[in-house]
Length: 533
Ligand code: GLN
Figure: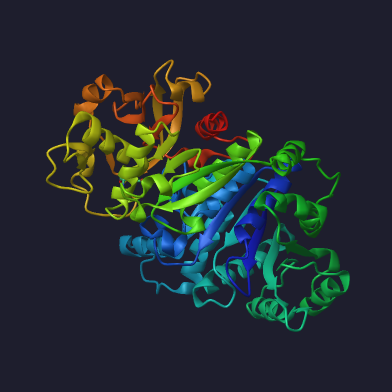
């Protein structure tokens, strides 16, 4: 089959869940046996989101091939089990960088470089995904970040308009808008949707399908009104009501025939509706899970999206263990030795979050000490693992000034240190240890057991600093074991204290590879331990 292109845009307001809708479309088409890839175009100028503060853009997600991307790629992977790459996440900055580098090389010699056609051509080239041509995807789903009407989105919309002209029925445009409910009038309002579609039409794009985000059910009369005002067929007006979980969205979309509408628009026979049994089993399990287990999330960003993949991974592992994981954010900046007990009271387990910089690390160290000495199951991820290591050095090995070279340049005990290769790096963007690296597990270790006896794994990284191997023997002698080692570089990737119930720190980020149908083994093992308490 000739590759088809689905574009997902959004209007009225941001945060409507375009990423979830795009991921759901991907899931539904996959369920019909199609080969799908999903990508995100973000209109901001940063070359990638790697240098963005989580307050700006939530979590930075990392692909296996080592690219720092938008958190929506996490939704894509969790929903579809597709492994995304650096080519699935594009920003305006990246587009301009490619064009400007080419201009400097002299590739356009003699030409004036302009937004149209040079920037739009580069956008189109990436939208067409020539790089995966050999894999012959049936569908390329492209989500465009931002909201219709933003100045910075315009080149992307122009590229879509051109592609639609070029490819005709091989392109389908899905537009997501918002239908607000006005309490005082007790009415749902479609005017913002009408305006948003008008705006899109003024750019030469007629949406084929509208997905209306709403907090209240839209009746058929309302859908008909939108359909006729916006020039869209009635069965192509779908509503996306608030759901108890984002994982209900694919099923709700299938029920309303979103995937069938896409196929019809393209001219592909719709066929049977797939049963999606594993997905339904998962949802049933989720609905049934009533026992609660409480986990303290020790981090510095009091913001849902900042630890998105960790939150999802904990929740998914809970569902597969028939429990509802209640996550309690504990601000590490507010934790001190005097209050740690009350801050962590009632938590069956604690997860110490990743992060960068000094802010909030003292609280993480205090939390690690409390959990270690009170045998509370603890999962440290990246900076969280580094804080476990520092705490152990200070309080068990007796090196009171033990620290990470990231936090203190003059510590005598740099138990977490900068790798030689990192020392001359001056550029901040994209220069960390990024992406998937192999790791060998010690047979019989708790980590190895969590991975069901596997001794060779591969996990994704995003950090600059590492466990300092010159202290390894001392750690091991005193009870903190280095049970995951990179076979090529000898770097320590996992530490654990086998004498405790579950005290594991990973230098990598297991949360990036936990999916709905394949929850990550370490999260599974952590939750299992919490249930046993
Ligand atoms: N700041 C630490 C480092 O660069 C940890 C990074 C992280 O937690 N992702 O090594």
